[in-house]
Structure formats: C-alpha cells, structure tokens
Amino acid sequence: MKVQKVISIIAIVASLTLIIYMCAVMAINSGDTEVPGNNLLITTPSSGSDSTPASGDAQTQSPGEAAPGTESPTVTGSPESGGTTSAPVTAPPDITAVPGGKTSANPAYAGKKIIAITFDDGPHGTNTPKILDMLKEKGVHVTFFVLGENLQSSGQKAILKREFDEGHEIASHSFNHPDFKTLSADERASQLQRTDDIIREVTGSAPVLFRPPYGNYNQDVSVQSGKAIVLWSIDSRDWDHISAKSVSNYASANGISQDEAKDKLINDVLFDGFTYTSGGKEYTNPSVVSQLSHGSIILFHDIHPYSGEAVGKLIDYLKQTGEYEMMTVSQMIETEQRAPQAGDVYAYMWETYATQKKNW
Image (tube, rainbow, N blue to C red; front, side, top):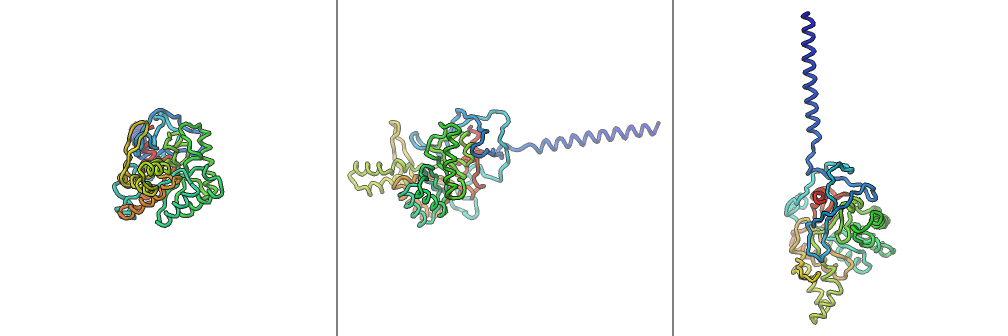
C-alpha cells in the first residue's frame, strides 16, 4: 500500500511538472511572433502580377506638394481591408524611414547634404547630348527618367547608351506619358514592359526606378510596376518658366534680347523664385536653392533647350558652397539606408512605401 501511494505521488508531481513546462513554451512562442508594425515593409510582386489590390478614393499630397497647376505628385489608393494580405511581410534591414538629419549620417559624407538631380521625358536628340557634355565636364551624375517613345531610333538608343556608359542612372517614365491612374492593368503593363524592353536591350538590365507621369500613382500602380516609385521634392518648373516659348515671350514683352531674357528667367528658377498663373489664380514658385535640403530630389526636363544651362549653373553654385554632394537617386538613397526596391515610394530620400502605405 505504501508503495502504491509513493507511485501515485510521483505520477502527480510528474504531471504537474509537464503542465508547467508546456505553459512556459507556449508563452515564449507567443512572444516570438510579435513584430512591431513600424518595422514592417510590404514586399510587392513584380510587374504583371495578378494580385493587384483594388484602388480607392483616399488622397494625400506628397512632401513635394506644390500649388495647383504644377506637376506635383499626388498619392492615392485604397485603405487597408482589415483582413490578411496576400503579399508577404518581411522585416527590412536597419532603415531610417524618417529624415535622419540635416546632413548625411554616412561617415563617407560627414557634414554634407546629398541631393539628386533628375531629368524627365528624354532623351532629346539635341538637348540631351549637350547636357551630357556639361555633366561630364563637371563630373556630376544624374538620373534620367526616359520615355520609351523617345527610344525608337538607333540615334535615340545611342544617346541612352551614352547616358548609361557615362555613369548616369537610367529609370522609366513610361512609354508615352499617360496618367497611370486612368489606365487599365493591361495598358499599364504595356507602358512599363515596352519601355523596360528597350532599356534592357541597350543597357543590359531593366530599370529599378519608375516615375509615374505627372506624379500620379496609387497602390495598384506601385504594385504592378515592380519598381521603386520616385517622385520629387523640388519642381523647378523649367517646363514652364524657361521653355523656349516663355523666354521668347519675355524678351518681346520687355524689349530685351533672347539671351537677356533667358538669363533672367533662369535666375528666377534657381535663385529668386517667380509667380505664375493657373486656373485664374496666382501662385509663387520658390527658387530651387531656397528649397534645397539633405535628401532633395530635383525635377528638370531635358527636352527643353535651356534646362541644361540652368542645371549647369545650379551645379556650379552647389560646388561653390562646398555643402553638397550630387548623386543619382539610387546612390543617394543607398548612402543613408539600403538600396531602393520594389514597393518603396520616394518623394525625397526617406519617403518610403513603409511610411506611405498608412495613407492608402
């Protein structure tokens, strides 16, 4: 009888021990699955994916917001559905998702403000080679957001090849500049694929960056592009204020030469700022220099004849100050965090998909 009691006691103790052990394991596993939401980045599928979220009506302006009538980026898309997402969620490397400071945190560029100059809508048969000559002379690399329709001839492809060979970044700006929010999925796919195919043919690889025309995109566009979306923080409005027509009109209205008009209007764009009228209302466009900060992405267009001269003067100014480093968009972003990837959205150096998606 005593032996049976001893055995019973041992069995009870063993059972209690096992129960306590199982509870402890469950508690540990529960703690392991908790991942802070701020550290998550949605990994989006590549171009052509069928798993495209539905679009919605929510709208917010990017950090590069400008007055109506400008080519300011508009961010739209659908809110979270509240259910589980079909896209895998992974924790990215150690990234700064908000501005990291007034100057670079990278020891290689300590004390420097890093910026990226970009050109849209090219290449142009006359203007772009002149811009490339200027950039080569000054030792500066930029990012060209090219249109597929301007890459049809052998001469146009040769300019693209030169851009690439001389160290500039090649990115997509669509095939013929439509508003991507108005296109069907098939139309978007065609715009992206045709441009990618030509860039790959010339450079050996497809671009990793995409700037949607007019800055108009939503979550559908971001996902389907399979690229990092790059907008801008400074719109020079070169396409308006220093276009050939604007310079000619200003010269006639003020009784001065074309060169004098050109110099005056370029100075407005870079240093003085200017006013313009849109929709019957007057707006002020601040000078490029007054808006500069670490991480700025500046918008110009290489299809206009005086934009290259304006950028040349801007580069000279930036070098004279000794405060700035100029890089391609991808190089700039990678100095402070990791390289751009599909699903990111940049209106300046730190504006990423991880911070934008809360607005969708």
